[in-house]
Image 1 (cartoon, one colour):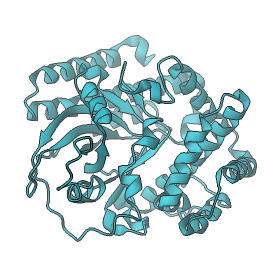
Image 2 (cartoon, rainbow, N blue to C red; image 1 turned 45 degrees about the vertical axis):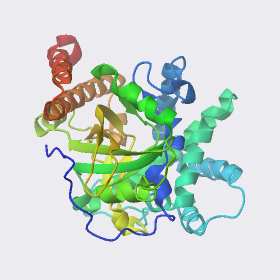
Image 3 (spheres, rainbow, N blue to C red; image 1 turned 90 degrees about the vertical axis):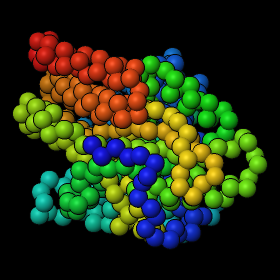
Length: 403
C-alpha cells in the first residue's frame, strides 16, 4: 500500500471553473441522510438508518434489490414505473444536461455485459453521464432521498424499488465501462474529497474519530459520491481553501477526506472464487470516470456504495497554506458483489457467500488500517485492528462459518 503523507503530488493543471460541477464533490447534506454510522454514531437521528429502524430498512432495501433482479424480465414495467416516479419529482425548468441525458436513461435498455468482445445495448453509459451533470446529480439524489420520506408503506415500497432500479442501471454502466475499458478496472490509489463543515458537522466527525476502532466507520449503501485524484483541486476548489483565506467566519471549516482505495488482496479473492466460482466480483466500488465527464479536469473517481473505516482525524499544514486543515484518513476496499450472478446461488449458498465475502473484506481492511495506524504512530489502534484481523481469521476457520 502506498500510504500518503502531506507531501502529495502538486497540481498538474489549472483547475477548471468550479460552479458547474463542484456540488457533487462537496455535497454532504444529501448523503448524510443516507449514511449508516457506527454504533451510536453522529447525527443518527438525522439519517434514514436511525438506530430503531436500521434492521427494518436494510431489510426493505434487500427485498427491493431481490425484487428488481428477480423481475428483470419485467424491465419495461420497471422503467415505466421509474419514468412515472421521476415525472412526479421534476418541477421547474429542466437543466440542459438533465434534458440531454435523462430521456436517454429513461428509454435505455441496459444489459450486464459478460464478454470482453461484446457491446452492451446502451453504449452511451447514460446514467454515468447523467450523474456527472449538476442537475443529474441533484435529481438522482432527490429520487433516492424521496424514496424514503413517506409514511405510506405501499408507496415507500414502490419508491424504494424505483431507487434500487436506478442504482442497478448505474451498476450496469459502471460494470460495462470497466469491462470495456480495462484501465478503469481495479482502481487503487488515494482520492480526495473537500467539503466545508459547520461546527456541529466537524464535531460529529471528531466524535466518530474518538470512538473505539470497531465503531469508527460509516457507509452509504444506497448512494454514490465523487472524489478527485488531485488533492489540490479538492482543497482549493471543493473545500474552498483559497476563497476562505481571508474569511474570519470561525464557524466554517475546510475539511479534507483522504481516501485510501485498496483492492481486495489476491489471496482473499482466490479463496472466494474457489468457493463460489460463479459469483462475479467486480471493482465498481471505485471507478475513474473523467473520460465520461464534461469536465475532464476533475480527475474524478466515482465511489459507489462506499464503506469507510476512519483511521484518524488530525490537522495538517499543507505547502503554501497559512492555516492547518482538518484531514480525515479513510480506507475503503474496492471489491463488489453487486451482480446478477449472486441470484444464481441458492438461499443457503447465497448466505454463505455473503458471510465469506464480508469476512475476507474485513480481514483485508483490518490489515490495511493496521499499517496506516502504525504509520501515524497510533499504537492503541494498531492493537485494535490486529484484534479485528484475528477475529476474522477465527471466523474464517470456524466449521460453522464454512458450512
